[in-house]
Length: 54
Image 1 (cartoon, helix red, strand yellow):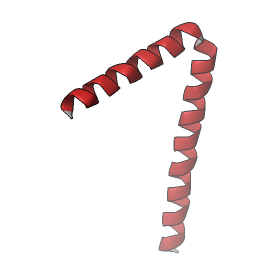
Image 2 (cartoon, one colour; image 1 turned 30 degrees about the vertical axis):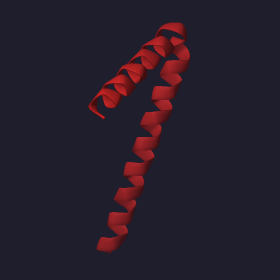
Image 3 (cartoon, rainbow, N blue to C red; image 1 turned 135 degrees about the vertical axis):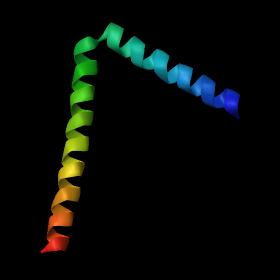
């Protein structure tokens, strides 16, 4: 099982590096979308907690 995790991690790292090298603009767009998603999720949690306090 540990070997499978190591192999999966290596595959993911190689895929990310391949994506960055072959298409840096697309990779930057994907990172931006990811950060926007995390930001909106955090804002939603903050809004929810604010409503609970009221």
